[in-house]
Image (cartoon, rainbow over all chains, first blue to last red; front, side, top):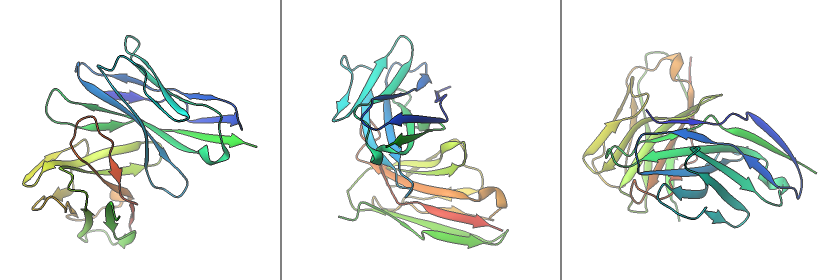
Length: 116
Length: 113
């Protein structure tokens, strides 16, 4: 069964520093996608970055990069040059594709606080 | 530029009442889904649809019904509300279920007393 694990309930980072949010996953499906979403205190869910299981390169989107280690089944989010506006909940999610069910599952989230 | 619209934003129900949470998207997305978010549990998939006329169960479907008569709309029905259904509900859509980001509605905060 598919599973997403985020082991860091909360993280602190100093403004302008980089921070890594951990995500490990478990699946037997060879085809899957990994996603990161940000949820600010206002409650909306904002897509950040996507990594496909067959992608050779790590995904990057501006200050966000995904450190994809397939053998270790990890998909950590790296935020460079943290800003105060990065303070939010961050969710890792996975979608399996081969079975045709296309179910997304989410981790329990990491609350990031950026300190001035 | 509406995206995914959920209504209502807040709702209080009494135990045993029924209601429908509305979700509409104007992006011609095939894939739509409903999640509930509870403290410490992340988002859990309730039901999803890969196109009009096609729905399937997610991780926590009990107590909820869905239908997809049009591409745009994907309502979630609570048949007989229970306090355990107190949660924040999100509707999401994406162009296809594969490899594309999901767009989320603003959420509905439901309290069952």
